Image 1 (cartoon, helix red, strand yellow):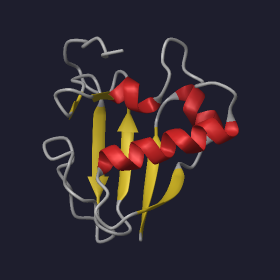
Image 2: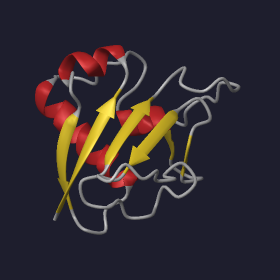
Image 3: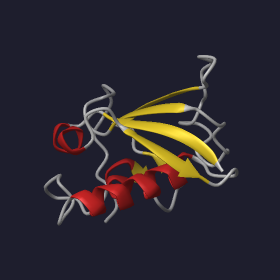
Length: 118
């Protein structure tokens, strides 16, 4: 097992997890797996997903068929030694133990809006 810190900079989610969440994941887990585990933590704390129009964080940030983040999503990841991880370009790569990931689901990038797949 490994531990990852996932911080989501989004108002409604931030109210549930103001300091992010520490996730215990399998050694081979990627950012996509971390987001799925975070969604389960949200479900444990809330009757429904807190962001209107979405069912999950995964739906909000990740294109399931093309296996990539939507253009409007900002994502930063660093190792415990503060080395940059390119999870945007390599979302299926395993995250290292003690990595910190910051997601900004909307408005993080100044590109064209991409409608999430539902």
